[in-house]
Image (tube, rainbow, N blue to C red; front, side, top):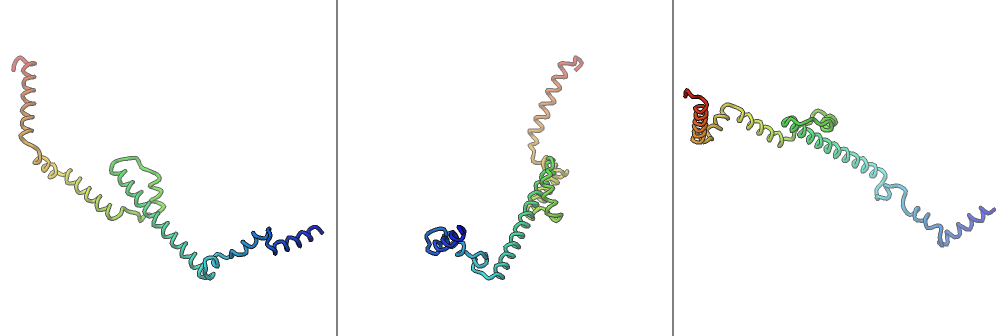
Length: 160
């Protein structure tokens, strides 16, 4: 009996708008369907959601590819300068797949560096370095060293 009286009174109070029913009216005014909230039909909303998911997957794939390229660059630099390897970089490269390589710009830079190092290491590179040296200064140093050695030998040896 108390329940019946309470429900009847609460319904009448809600209808008068004196409280208690404000929460329900707010819930009823907002549509429960997200498509209706966005102002689209159900099919349009589903298509929109599919596009959003596809775009997110493409962004994630591009991001993973960039991370793997950076990891590949770090691995390359570690090998070049004989630094310790990183497990994190190797894992990122494996996650992205085996088709990961250095970006084209970096490949060109690496190729140029290798050509320069090969030129420096070759005999012709060493000859060019000799040409750039000051031969007069080298001769003077050699003569000074020779005279110092000669004087030291004369002091130590009585035959000379």
